[in-house]
Image 1: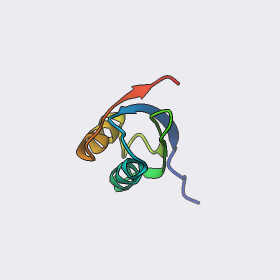
Image 2 (image 1 turned 90 degrees about the vertical axis):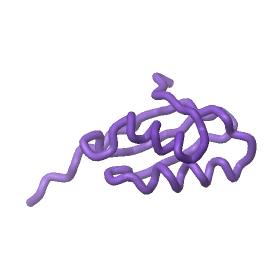
Image 3 (image 1 turned 30 degrees about the vertical axis):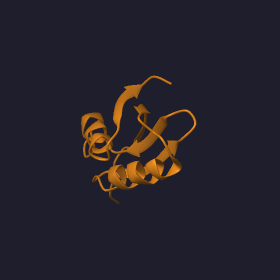
Image 4 (image 1 turned 60 degrees about the horizontal axis):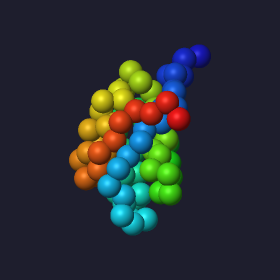
Length: 78
């Protein structure tokens, strides 16, 4: 039996959203990272929730992926 990698849920605050298609751009970019299991962008609040394996996709890499999509983001406590 193999152990499944531990996944955590990290919240980010993102800025620069102007339309719902921004959500799709962020979800696609972050979803491409190894270790990312799920990405959910909350358009109204600017929250990005990412379920990921921190040994494969670090918070810095997720922030960089959001930046690559054209938005600024930072880890958030809520």
